[in-house]
Length: 86
Image (cartoon, rainbow, N blue to C red; front, side, top):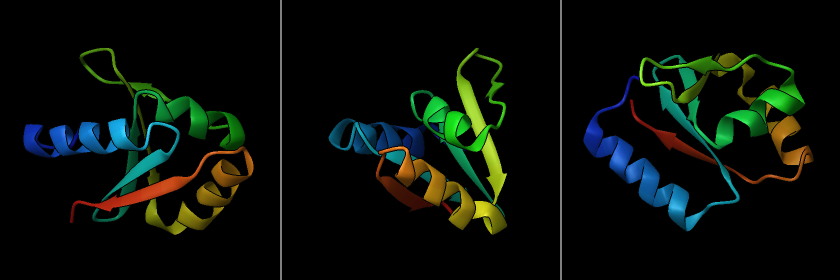
């Protein structure tokens, strides 16, 4: 996981408020997704998720694939929220 504890706390607050949405976090040249959002991306895009050291689910893809991923996630019935973390 590439995010600080403060930002992860912000992410969890956003997730609580928008539980049905997929939250994608941009870090420079890639997007990341965590926990409940990972299967919502993996299934429609047929991508394999990863596990972090703490056994939590994680997914990453390049910025250049955002439109492709976003279209498939939205078509599967989930709104998408993008957070930019620089």
